[in-house]
Image (cartoon, rainbow, N blue to C red; front, top):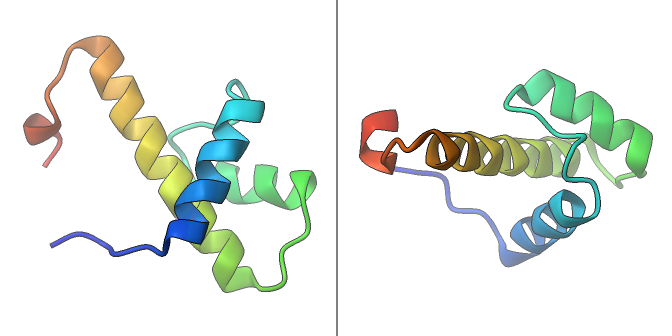
Length: 74
């Protein structure tokens, strides 16, 4: 079973990736630091949720660029 994330987190994450496509990586810890430098968030939990979703999206996009299917990531 996967995580269920609110649409707000998904929208913010997609917008940030669109604005800063080269900044984010597949590392959750690095993405947290990048988010802290880019914007202020009202809570750490919100920042971590966005960083987690960005990490998830980056892993998927990296796998697709290498030609791997999403089933092989599990």
